[in-house]
Amino acid sequence: MNLNLDFASIIERWPTFFDGALLTLQLAFIATMLGTAIGVLGAIGRRSHHPIVSRICGIYVEAIRNTPLLVQIFLVYFGLASLGLKFSAFVVAAAALTINVGAYTTEIIRAGFDSIPRGQIEAAEGLALSRAQIYWHVVMWPAIEKVYPSLTSQFVLLMLASSVTSQISAEELTAVANYVQSDTYRAFETYILVALVYIVLSLIMRAGFWLLGLVIFPRRRRLGTPL
Amino acid sequence: MHKTLNAATNAATQSPVVSLKNVHKSFGTLKVLDGVSFEVDRGEVLVLIGRSGSGKSTALRCIDRFERIDSGEIVVCDHRVSDPKLDLRALRQDVGIVFQSYNLFPHLTIEENITLAPCSVKGVSKAEAKEEARRVLAQVGLEDKLHQYPEQLSGGQQQRAAIARSLAMQPKVMLFDEVTSALDPELTGEVLKVIEALAADGMTMVMVTHEMGFARGIANRVVFMHRGKVHETGPAAILTSPATPELAQFVGTGL
Ligand SMILES: Nc1ncnc2c1ncn2[C@@H]1O[C@H](COP(=O)(O)OP(=O)(O)OP(=O)(O)O)[C@@H](O)[C@H]1O
Ligand SMILES: [Mg+2]
Image 1 (tube, chains in turn yellow, red):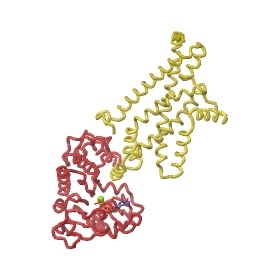
Image 2 (cartoon, rainbow over the protein chains, first blue to last red):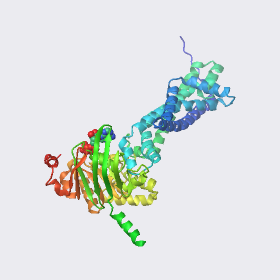
Image 3 (spheres, chains in turn blue, red):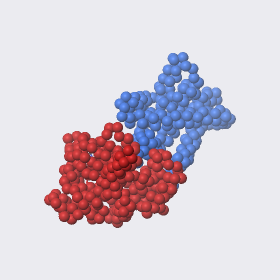
């Protein structure tokens, strides 16, 4: 057994890895933004008194949570193709990841909504706030603050899971690694490096979410205690 | 022509702020309000007392339409609460309600708690709302807590802040449901003082309380509820010389 590692030929491809990492972050960013929007709407929908609305949202969540991400990606990819719609691999990947993470955020945000005590809502009703105002000021912000750690973990997981979009040739980090290793025959070194880059991306995201949390949750910033 | 108009406005100002007429309310098969009637005039303090489960909270919640009644009539500040076409948010601008669990919004400062409703419901400007927040906080003795968060306040301070939050909407009547029940005796005192000051200012109030000494001091009218009915009612004096054995027993046991 002779372990012979040669990183030189890998490292000299750093611009390729950099581009791949950037694309991974872009995918994660888009899916995080849109996924949050879907999550909020989905959570409102799941709590709706309208049985059809809550049923549809429930079916969406369960369908996504009980199928593999790769299959969802292929469904979007081939689904769009069979409708005669042509999109780049990046757009398909971003759409599939958004649909996927939207289901998980729906559940997380719903749990946050459910954790707001009834008394808070009654107090707001007693102050004559409208339903929309109550949702916005009294339910949504504290709910998101409560579930923020789970929510951000979910988005980091999503960034890592985006590596499977290499299967439809989105040029993200893992796809880039696949090219490099087949070019250089340095597979082990390539994936060691890629693993390290993913760790760095995770840390970047966690740092970003931490900073964002300080901005959007002033109480947290001042008191430092969980809500 | 003018005379009738004047007569009409006079009648309006003299009509009771809160009036319940033969109100019935059941939860499933449980009859909680069984023909309850009472009235509260302007500047009056009505104290609701009675055993646990006698329907005091339910009666109070019906006034602010947190519960819908089965039959009877409730009119509050000229809003027909029992009318299905009621403008609920208009009613609630005229009625302030404070609960046993203060229910301050934990993610907002005391100032933000207070300015939220005036700004978003009444469209008051931020600056004006902050001015008002300062005023109502001074009224409850908490000027220095403007920028604190609820969790940084004691229970009594939180309850006073909750009262201030209601006052900032300039309600015509305040409802209090056992607002001191969650508090230690010392903290109870500071909240009751605030309510006394409000009464002295002429605020119309309906309150549920178990503080009999306080009730005696503040009530213009006492309503003793028993099994969903107004069992005995009268001035505060009925607490010291009750007419019915049930009220005598209730006052005697101090419950
Ligand atoms: N939303 C509800 N659904 C079903 N039953 C209810 C509901 N609210 C109150 N009740 C019942 O109605 C009865 C009267 O309740 P209510 O809260 O009005 O009593 P109360 O006089 O305020 O008592 P307490 O002094 O304990 O606060 C109780 O038996 C209670 O269990
Ligand atoms: Mg009660």
